[in-house]
Length: 170
Image (cartoon, rainbow, N blue to C red; front, side, top):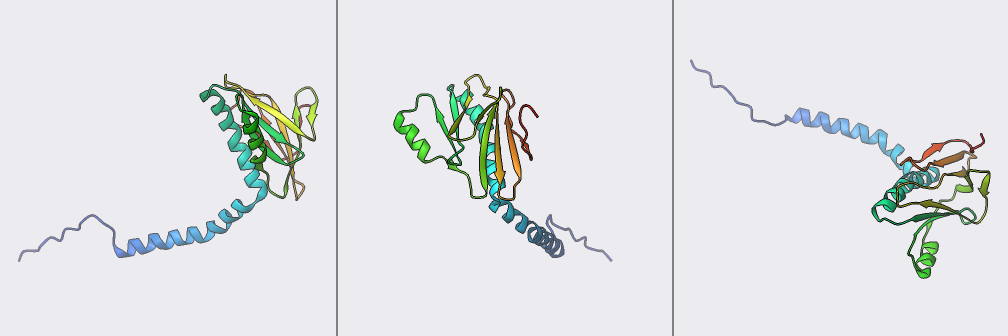
């Protein structure tokens, strides 16, 4: 009596596929509400924009070989970007189309070394061709009274976020 050997082709059984799909469903069921909350939280979206945009501006200044300026409109609660060589019309357009920060997130001031504060109007943070920037701290506050400080350091590519009001003299 001779037995035929059954060769299994590469692939997954139906049970294995059902188990994997069930596990993926459980993960999605638990993660989706948290993901949705993260997208709608005004503090998180504003912070993500600041933490993402500033390193990008440093890199852009080097690659485009021009000085770039981040204008922080403390009074208007808006951030906008200009660069050297922009025409007055382009600057006006940038002012109108700047990144408006969401409700619940308020810029309080921008601090520079030497006890210089900009509490109203527009603060300028420069990003230079050589890859460094001005040193500054952007201070903000949320509706639930959480204070935030964003440290922009001249030679670091990232922005440091501290969840309190911290200045150069603290």
